[in-house]
Amino acid sequence: MWRKTAVMVMCGALSLVFATGTTALAQSSTASDQTAPLVGVTSITFSAEIQAVVDGMRDRLAERGFRPGETVDYVVRDAGADGGEITNVVRDFASRNVHVIVAITTPSIQAALASKNRIPIVAAGLPAMQAREISNAYRRRAVTGISDGDTREDQFALIDILAPEIQSIAIPVDPDRGPIAAQIQNLTAIARGHDLSVIPLPVSIRQNAVGSEINSLNPGKTAILLDRMVLPDAPVEALSAAASAQNLLLFGTDEDSVIRGALAAMVIEPHGIGQQLGDMVADILEKPSSARRPFERARTSHLVFNEDGRAVLDVAAIETALAGRRRSVIAWAEDASPRPRLKPAIPEAPPPLGVVRGIKIPIPRSNPTRP
Image 1: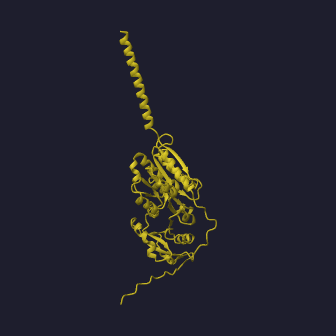
Image 2: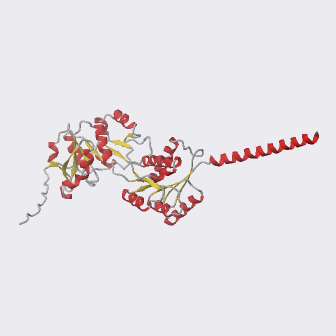
Image 3: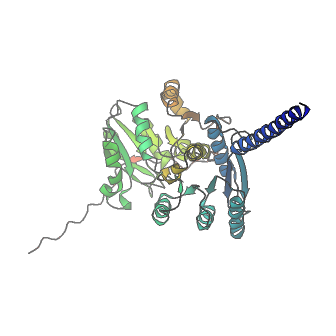
């Protein structure tokens, strides 16, 4: 009897040991399964702008449920402007088995692409043309990211919101820079998508003057859009004064134009780019195949306006209209803002205002007729 009891005790003990061991293994397996994914972030060097990008990425990942130290971990390293060191940084990421490499600026992106590992790469801080080249050259790599973008589509969408009664957009052009039709060609298709027409407004950079054609524009149906891609050195102050005299709304495509006199513009800023990156990284962590989607262009994330804009724009209504698009309204003169931003310095002494006068427009030479 005692032998039977002893056997039963031993079997029970063995069962307990086996059960305990199984539980320990299960707990170990669960702990391993629950290890937070690691995201490696690198740049050739860190600046305030790049730090804002990283902050934006972390903020968006947190919104998506990836909390630092709980459901995601980060390793952030720069190369101290050393091109050789950036290769070591990428190699270190691979040894740590990071789940995603976020490479900011071209040297970091090139180092990540040159690595033999197959870790998904999310890139930022590169021109759109380079993004296309990478997509074509590395079709078998899991690489995607955010490229520099053309904001003109966003500016036309902004005019739709701020001035829905507008039917045509006057684009400042300088006749001395070549054929006018060629200067506004790319804008015509964008405007058409918003049921707007585009008309040229001659200005002279050399004379710091606005053509007398501005006097014929109907302020109830026409607004001016200063496109810095068309006219990088535009006489902004002269345009602002001339537009104000004619009660015309003047919009810009960059923050510097707003500082110098344009009423408002949609702008790209570092934290917003980081938020886009955060969505990409979150998508990859949830579904690794997301790393093969095409590059996106950087989207505008803030409406900036000057004090004159505050006087003529319904800021509260604009804030409501933009809220659903995850964008915000910021006055450039304010020090505090809901997101980390870097603003251009306010000019100490703007150049003298130009005048509105007739500007001679060169007539294109016609092709000689064949005999």
